[in-house]
Image 1 (cartoon, helix red, strand yellow):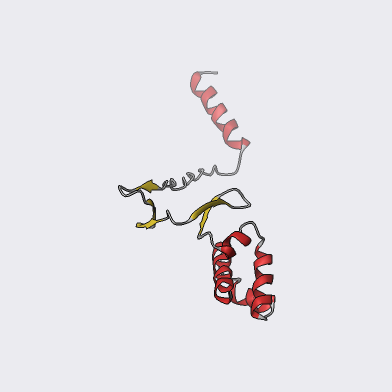
Image 2 (tube, rainbow, N blue to C red; image 1 turned 90 degrees about the horizontal axis):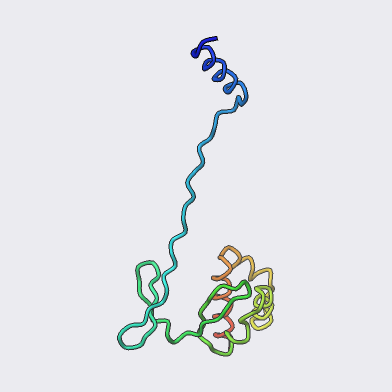
Length: 128
């Protein structure tokens, strides 16, 4: 057996071992780096979101039940429902506004969880 025959036999053996075509792995998309809040010259705490800068120094920094950082205005409604489940908020709004939880969920259920919490909190603030 010469060198060419040996190379041909190993190539043939390698090609019959897997009949499926090899897939290329997609590159992982890296998450955008989180930008920390910065202090301005006058002491205001600034945060940039979607190209806009906001002063967040008047908000309370709190941890959510999942452990992420959130900000709220620190009023009585915010303090009362900080760690509350979304269902608790729906119940409170339903009692306060004298509507069913089902009708509220039909109206606001299409929003993400944060938007639901914010909207229900604003309804409670308006009713107070």
